[in-house]
Image 1 (cartoon, rainbow, N blue to C red):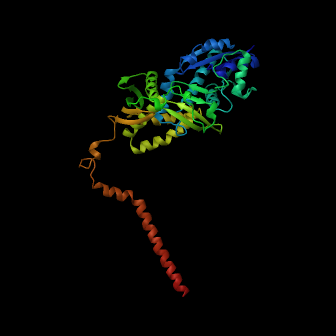
Image 2: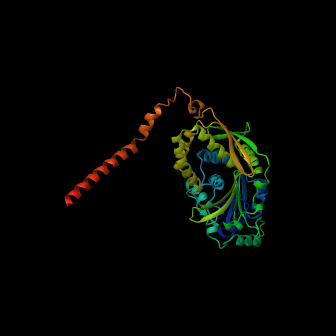
Length: 416
């Protein structure tokens, strides 16, 4: 009796050739799972037919867009998580969700194994398999890139041609792209030279800033408890909100990131990312927090943010650590409600205004006039106490210096 293997399927080069390879090497029924996470109709159009034509027994196409934004993007945004100072974690956030749905389908069809098309050099293999280990520890994992003799994308293209599998990649223009509702990533080709500028025709979501509108545009983003809920005063659901901000940011050339990042496996890689809506949301959310949170809470949250980013990047989503961070973040977000106005112009984003009923900024307390909350004469006592450690250290150092000088004088007299 043949095995049943459930494969995370995108319809791209790697997973397209994996279907016949699994059938050939494992004598298996292959069930594909294609996730709609907002990568666009062109990528998903005909994906089920393509999988079946490649030899799959079935292909489930799952619409995960709402869950992706609500349960993965927005919590990561609320945490302020950014990896390697720039990366807004678009690919990393999606993998635990796709893998979770893959496990659910594997259980429903009685699968014997799980498979993915991630290479042995990349991060995604870890992200998928961390989820598998947590949600389906009894199922073995098949990773063809760690087993087969194919060693390059050129080899993969040749294999696809030999099997008669249609693909979009070519040897002349080979980019590895990952698209979803949050971002579009580009790797490979000329980008493997970190000193080479990305070609103009590489970008697909964002206008060249030099060709962007000659007049700035303001966009107002509304938040409730740290979650974005409106654009320019219009309430929108999670998917519609990110889609709207992608369009606004994209036409102004906002959200391009060129990053040499640190992969989990130890090497550095170069990627170019387009995250127009995400860039607007991170900018606005950070500004609203700056208005509402006190200094110590903001500082504590800033310490957690990079840890949260590492967690997401490394695929450790289904962990107690993430749940604990979310519990802390949720408390910090209880008053993060209000609006932030951003001004977009030629690829740049500037904060033009911010407002919240929970703002700790109050004009009454920052003017030079008298008020009932802050008495300027109190500052003298505060400064004396605030400077107490420095004052004590200075006194102690002075006493030691006097004592040493006296001891040296005694020694000199004794020597005479």
